[in-house]
Amino acid sequence: MITPASEPASPAEPDLPRLYVPEEVAAVLGCSAWWVKDRARRRLIPFTRVGRAYRFSDEHLAEIIRMHEERPAVHAQRPVVAAAPTRKSPARHRPDAAVPAVRLQARPPRRTAKSQYGPAA
Image (cartoon, rainbow, N blue to C red; front, side, top):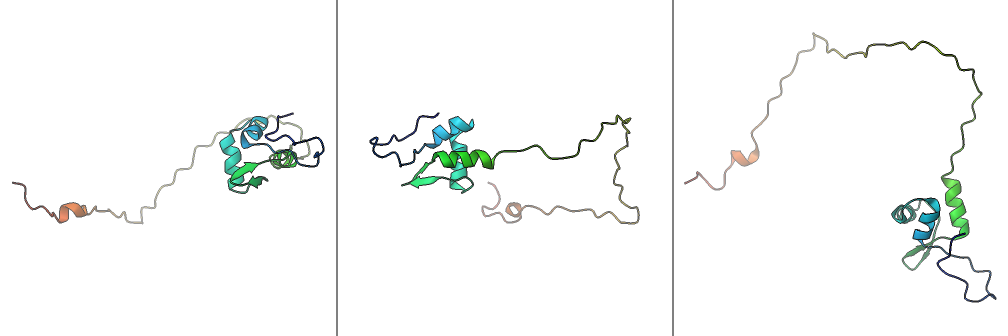
Protein backbone atom coordinates (compact mmCIF):
# COMPACT_ATOMS: atom_id res chain seq x y z
CA MET A 1 0.00 0.00 0.00
CA ILE A 2 1.17 3.54 -0.63
CA THR A 3 1.89 5.95 2.15
CA PRO A 4 -0.83 8.60 2.04
CA ALA A 5 -0.08 12.29 1.80
CA SER A 6 -2.34 12.96 4.76
CA GLU A 7 -2.90 10.67 7.71
CA PRO A 8 -6.14 11.00 9.70
CA ALA A 9 -5.58 13.39 12.60
CA SER A 10 -6.90 10.96 15.17
CA PRO A 11 -8.27 7.42 15.25
CA ALA A 12 -11.71 8.89 15.97
CA GLU A 13 -11.93 10.17 12.35
CA PRO A 14 -11.60 7.04 10.18
CA ASP A 15 -14.39 8.27 7.83
CA LEU A 16 -12.12 10.78 6.08
CA PRO A 17 -10.68 9.53 2.79
CA ARG A 18 -6.94 9.21 2.45
CA LEU A 19 -5.64 11.57 -0.21
CA TYR A 20 -2.57 10.98 -2.34
CA VAL A 21 -0.40 13.53 -4.13
CA PRO A 22 0.27 13.15 -7.88
CA GLU A 23 3.80 11.85 -7.24
CA GLU A 24 2.42 8.96 -5.17
CA VAL A 25 -0.21 8.13 -7.80
CA ALA A 26 2.48 8.24 -10.49
CA ALA A 27 4.63 5.80 -8.51
CA VAL A 28 1.73 3.35 -8.30
CA LEU A 29 0.78 3.70 -11.97
CA GLY A 30 4.37 3.61 -13.20
CA CYS A 31 4.17 6.93 -15.01
CA SER A 32 5.36 10.47 -14.41
CA ALA A 33 3.80 12.97 -12.05
CA TRP A 34 3.54 15.32 -15.03
CA TRP A 35 1.26 12.79 -16.79
CA VAL A 36 -1.00 12.56 -13.74
CA LYS A 37 -1.23 16.35 -13.35
CA ASP A 38 -1.78 16.88 -17.08
CA ARG A 39 -4.60 14.32 -17.22
CA ALA A 40 -6.24 15.87 -14.15
CA ARG A 41 -5.90 19.37 -15.60
CA ARG A 42 -7.54 18.20 -18.83
CA ARG A 43 -10.29 16.48 -16.80
CA LEU A 44 -9.45 13.03 -18.20
CA ILE A 45 -9.03 11.32 -14.83
CA PRO A 46 -10.97 11.77 -11.58
CA PHE A 47 -9.42 13.89 -8.84
CA THR A 48 -10.18 16.14 -5.89
CA ARG A 49 -8.93 19.69 -5.88
CA VAL A 50 -7.73 21.11 -2.59
CA GLY A 51 -6.93 24.74 -3.25
CA ARG A 52 -4.80 24.59 -6.37
CA ALA A 53 -3.43 21.11 -5.66
CA TYR A 54 -4.63 17.83 -7.16
CA ARG A 55 -5.37 15.06 -4.68
CA PHE A 56 -6.50 11.50 -5.34
CA SER A 57 -8.45 9.10 -3.14
CA ASP A 58 -8.35 5.30 -3.23
CA GLU A 59 -11.53 5.32 -5.31
CA HIS A 60 -9.98 7.74 -7.80
CA LEU A 61 -6.93 5.54 -8.16
CA ALA A 62 -9.05 2.42 -8.70
CA GLU A 63 -11.15 4.24 -11.32
CA ILE A 64 -8.05 5.50 -13.14
CA ILE A 65 -6.75 1.94 -13.33
CA ARG A 66 -10.13 0.69 -14.63
CA MET A 67 -10.28 3.50 -17.21
CA HIS A 68 -6.94 2.52 -18.72
CA GLU A 69 -7.47 -1.21 -18.54
CA GLU A 70 -7.45 -3.07 -21.85
CA ARG A 71 -9.07 -6.45 -22.30
CA PRO A 72 -8.30 -8.92 -25.05
CA ALA A 73 -10.64 -8.77 -28.02
CA VAL A 74 -13.27 -11.50 -28.10
CA HIS A 75 -12.92 -13.23 -31.47
CA ALA A 76 -13.63 -16.76 -32.51
CA GLN A 77 -10.36 -18.63 -32.77
CA ARG A 78 -9.75 -19.53 -36.39
CA PRO A 79 -7.30 -22.23 -37.35
CA VAL A 80 -4.06 -20.75 -38.59
CA VAL A 81 -3.53 -21.50 -42.27
CA ALA A 82 -0.06 -20.80 -43.56
CA ALA A 83 -0.49 -19.21 -46.96
CA ALA A 84 2.36 -18.40 -49.28
CA PRO A 85 3.00 -14.66 -49.14
CA THR A 86 2.23 -12.89 -52.38
CA ARG A 87 4.22 -9.89 -53.43
CA LYS A 88 2.60 -7.17 -55.36
CA SER A 89 4.50 -4.27 -56.74
CA PRO A 90 3.31 -1.00 -55.26
CA ALA A 91 0.94 0.80 -57.57
CA ARG A 92 2.52 3.93 -58.89
CA HIS A 93 0.38 6.92 -59.62
CA ARG A 94 1.13 8.18 -63.09
CA PRO A 95 -0.46 11.44 -64.16
CA ASP A 96 -2.42 11.29 -67.37
CA ALA A 97 -0.61 12.61 -70.41
CA ALA A 98 -3.74 14.56 -71.39
CA VAL A 99 -3.45 16.82 -68.32
CA PRO A 100 -1.01 19.64 -69.09
CA ALA A 101 1.71 20.26 -66.54
CA VAL A 102 1.54 23.74 -64.98
CA ARG A 103 4.86 25.34 -64.16
CA LEU A 104 4.81 27.44 -61.06
CA GLN A 105 6.84 30.60 -60.98
CA ALA A 106 8.18 32.08 -57.76
CA ARG A 107 7.67 35.76 -57.14
CA PRO A 108 10.49 37.85 -55.71
CA PRO A 109 10.46 38.40 -51.94
CA ARG A 110 8.82 41.60 -50.74
CA ARG A 111 11.92 42.91 -49.02
CA THR A 112 13.90 43.06 -52.27
CA ALA A 113 11.06 44.73 -54.18
CA LYS A 114 11.11 47.84 -51.93
CA SER A 115 14.34 48.78 -50.30
CA GLN A 116 13.95 51.36 -47.56
CA TYR A 117 17.66 52.12 -47.41
CA GLY A 118 18.37 52.93 -51.02
CA PRO A 119 21.51 51.89 -52.89
CA ALA A 120 24.57 50.89 -50.91
CA ALA A 121 27.34 53.49 -50.71
